[in-house]
Image (cartoon, rainbow, N blue to C red; front, side, top):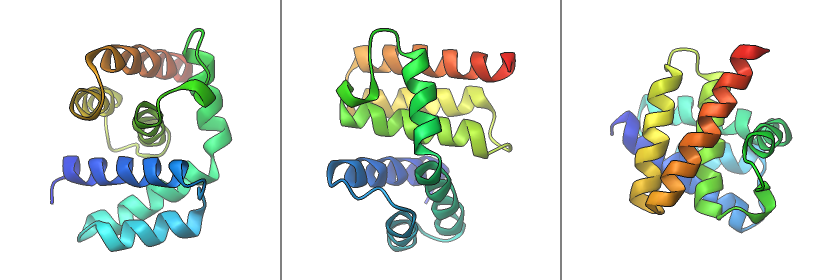
Length: 134
């Protein structure tokens, strides 16, 4: 399993949890340990837990940077991709922000639309710029 495969599974977990309204740390950790292999299980479970525990702050970052859009109106796939990327940007110091953004764009192209990829790129670019300005 590659890191890219693990990212896709984590995005799918975030999507599933949001769609079923079951965003909680225990479920995130459980799903990560079931679906991710090897080192990715522990790392993914930790990242998903951080995302779920700080969801309000992550969504606030997304809302602040997404002009005229709020997370409540965004397509669930796009939102799951951005939440995962924002979690990586916040909590994975060993992954360069540019890599995280590029991987998010690739996921959007695969699971959503080209216009979603451009939107996600713009939002994540603004999120990283905002974090540097703080």
